[in-house]
Image 1 (cartoon, helix red, strand yellow):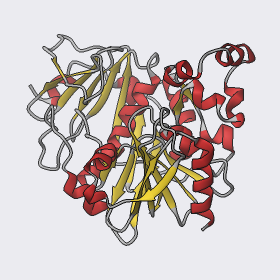
Image 2 (cartoon, one colour; image 1 turned 180 degrees about the horizontal axis):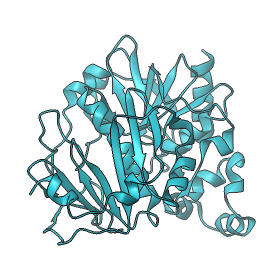
Image 3 (cartoon, helix red, strand yellow; image 1 turned 120 degrees about the vertical axis):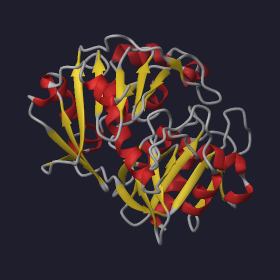
Amino acid sequence: MRASDVIATLDLTPATGAEPFYLSVGPVGLTVLCPEPLRGMLVAYFDEALSETPGPTVVNLLPGQALDPEPDWTEWSREPGKAGRKDAIVDLEDARLVRKLRSGVTFLQSPGALVALGPLTENVSTVINFINTQILTQCQQEGWQLCHAAAVTDGTRTLAISGLSGGGKSTSVLRMMDLDGIAFVSNDRLLVQAGRPARALGIPKHPRINPGTILGNPRLHGMLTSARRAELDAMEAEVIWTLEDKHDLMIGAVYGPGRVRYEAPLTDFWVLNWSRAASDPTRVAEVDLSARPDLLGAIMKSPGPFYQHPDGTFEPDGARPDPAPYLAALQGIRVSEVSGRIDFDALAEAGRGLFDG
């Protein structure tokens, strides 16, 4: 079976008959076709990346449609440390089908056809991720390295922050956003390209933050009702730290216009290796990344089931990133380890010193 066989079973007219909108991020231009009300939701979300120029890569979104017949899905393995069932795939001759097991949203990923179908309006975040995946895929095919990192910039100096999930990347980056002249680059996925200077490229994905991040930053308190804040204030700190209750933080709404810049020169990379149980003060110390595979492991990010290599093959299940291209891309970048106890105030002061310097 080929991609064209799948498309023949679908009705593309709800997408092709809708008014398109266009996105531009770094070297990538996208044209997105989808009906209302999903279109309006996505246009509002992607506000900072909207363009008036049609992009060569076309994404078709088909709310409410389904594959018929259903294929035999093969479950995709989760990354180490991740639990639960997430993705399943079916490889075609020239494409890959990907199913989100929790939501039932289905995707067709191929060089000539990009389609999402199913309960899309009820799973807007999943659709946003699929659109951003096209940016990640094209850049990786052109030699960019995908990092599990957030980043901010002042236009001259750019700080990327990596660490294990739940280690405080989003909280750290948002504390840096309180500094004058700092712009948001990316929240959880960062592309890096070798050069003099190296380049960082973010994607239009706003931070999705937990209540602990909101409570720790007065600027964000308005994201919670007073009743919810009182409920959280009564909880133990350890419970709040592990609480999963995601809220979308729209950068423009909280920090004002002009505070997003997706592309910037990369100068500094911090890897969070701190702990709530540590007694030593927070310390930011430069390291030789080639001698610290543990820290490099926190930076590297597998491209996942959607990625199609330049030779046409899809990423195999269980593949792990190759450290060598990452070390080459980060050559000349000042990489530092953040150790000691978790102290966002201390880290914010270190960030202020970095950007003021």
